[in-house]
Length: 149
Image (spheres, rainbow, N blue to C red):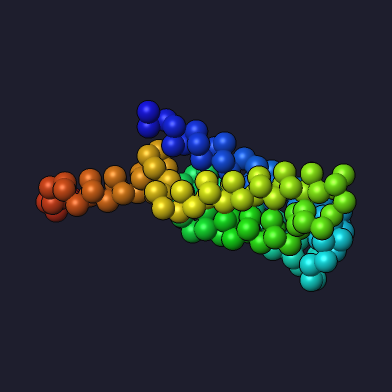
């Protein structure tokens, strides 16, 4: 069952990694989307969110600084839900799609918060470094021997 943790991290992080790459590769189009949402400094906002998504997604995938990365992504998801996918007050033909995106972001925030609380689990860089630390702490001390001349 330990395989579920890295599989879950892979599936959870995939959308953030691909979205971060999309933000950076298609920067002008994404900045226009940011501008249309009424957010300040569209090019900078897009670049910052692209980096947060990409780096956060990779950190979650690898399980290194996963709690911090998940917290950053949770903040991103809530802010995006509230500023970009505000479906209230929109015409019905637009409200439905924005409502789906809004609740998708809120739902993924729940997953990110679970990762913040429980951590990355087994088969992560964090778990591997902890195992190595324990191994080093419990191994017998090395005896220094003079080198043959």
